[in-house]
Image 1 (cartoon, rainbow, N blue to C red):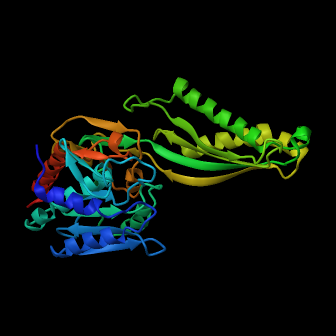
Image 2: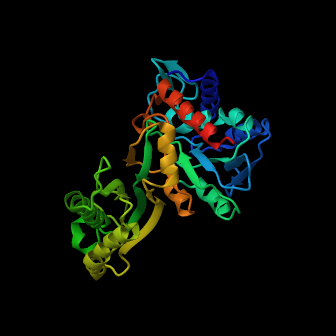
Image 3: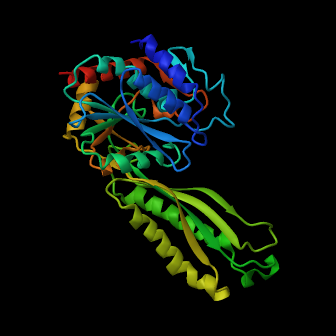
Length: 386
């Protein structure tokens, strides 16, 4: 299968915008808004507090009834320090693939969606199609929250949503949630020859990190489990540790970043609460017996809820029909789906490419995946047409 030339050109246009999350996405959003204007489609922008980033929401077809939303994020991860074979902002076609930052995550999907707009506007639609393009998904699903604050109060909102994150065009009905925090350990410094007179922040951090590791081992051994996931249990991970200034100084400060990737059946606040109880019940008294101002503080970094959509939900049934497949999957990586589901819009994940190619140097999407996505969307056009 080969995608249409129009889709390839649209992917090239979108990838050329450097929408790394640290940058503004307004140039890309302006391009999309002008494109939709050309077909008589009005769109609404929901900007961030700086005015330098925006979500875009539009409805194609009747606005007095609920339809199906097609959703994707416009930001991409950095290319800094990665060894690319070619310019990451210029799409290169080779060996049945399109190379470039965002080709699979997830401008390939956004491009395919934009290229069905002419077909949607040429028909009389019985059911509308909504478009939702967000910012800052890659740094904690931040942007879509602004959009959902507005959409939740619409008199008519979508009755189902498809997010085009890369699933090799398989229908994903669930993914894990994520909660990440930074723990600051406040100790008391002194010369290392007098170590018992100090409170070693690095060592107490290590005790908490060790407890987190034991939690992860417990989940791996005892569950709960959901074997539809490739990693069937909640995982615990510590990724960054910073502390100490010199070996002959007992360190007064240490911080570490950790995360839970939890099954939808578990409550993240319970997981965080367990770690805090260990630190404060098992370690704090000992620390403060040396220095009364020692202790712990906890800083949220990012969080998004898990997604858990029923097999018999309308959007699941429709997405399976559009892919012409009967099976569904569950994915380990996170999306905006859990947030969208929280405002009572059932959501599935289905898009071209593989997460294994995302975020890497020489990111790529296979041409036949784009073609499969086009076929999926063309079946949607037929479904919503009068």
